[in-house]
Amino acid sequence: MADSKYLTRIAITSPDGAVPRAIIKELVALNNEIAKDGENQPTKEIKVLVPTSYGLSNQNGVERVKVDYSSIDSIANALAGVQFLVIISPSGYPPETHTTTVKGAVKAKVPYIVPDAYEFDVFNKKLVQESKAAAMALKRCREVENFSLAEKNGNSVYIALICGLLFDKGLALGPDYFGIDTQKKQVTFFDDGLTKVTMSTVGQLASAAVVLFNLPKSQIRKWVNKAVYVASFTVNQKQMLEAAHRVMGTTDRDWRIQYQGAGERFNEGVNDLLQDELSGARKTKTMPSFFKDGGGDFESLRVLSNTKLGLGKEMLDPSIEEACETLEQLSSPIFGGWPEDEK
Image 1: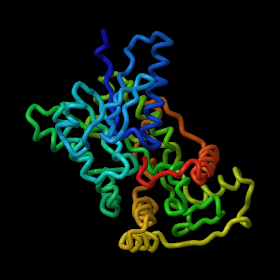
Image 2 (image 1 turned 90 degrees about the vertical axis):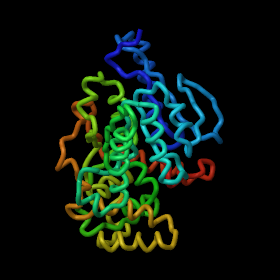
Image 3 (image 1 turned 180 degrees about the vertical axis):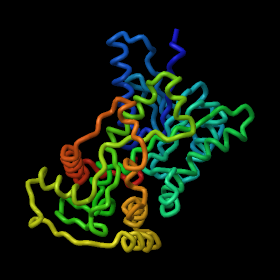
């Protein structure tokens, strides 16, 4: 019989993307560890909600269930019995997909929902005012509260798992994120390049999510309708470049270095968006975190839960090295690239 102290039925939206793949991998590893060590708790039932166009190939103890992401009922049926839902917005789907997913989860009475709000401190008013992406992240959290209140006998709550900008993904996707191009050896420092921003690797976010799933219910309840803050490190652009030098064996002389005002770059992104250029979405998403006192450095403002979750801080140099290796793979015609919307 399952130990009632623990949640056992976990669901994840979107099978694609770096984040869901990493979470699924960590969950499978956790199940293997529980089974091997004979720990006094049940393994996790892992369900992944996939679009109707996908094939179904269950493997490694992961059940794939087809859903129509435009249908509340389809999502609710797929989530029947699920205790913990992690939402990662599917690549290429409209923004309202998140709303539909939350409505389906609330209808299915999923107790705990982690909304897609990972990269921004949703409780920093200044950041939310300056960043549409942060405002959207906060809206996604509030949706869980509001729809649960509106649903008869609704019992869903959210836990915002906030990790900051995803470092390895951002660096690998090029200079529109952090102003650094390791392939061309070019860097654009925003303002003076000294604004610190709290970030996490994809692996750190996945580890945090899986540890959260595996806590006793009594501990999980501490974060009901609140945020869990985790991080790999808090760094500025100049520290990133110094780490790149150590990893790549370069110096400033080998790089083209320039400066641009953070506000100017944000406005540049707005103009790029008007031209439907991909760079616009990237710049407007990340730049508010680099504004002076803009809320990107939440480590100095919040209490990180790394210790409570048993997570260490990560080192910058290995993360830079891994991102550079990923970038080489992305540049390969065999790999085919990393889609912009992929989390």
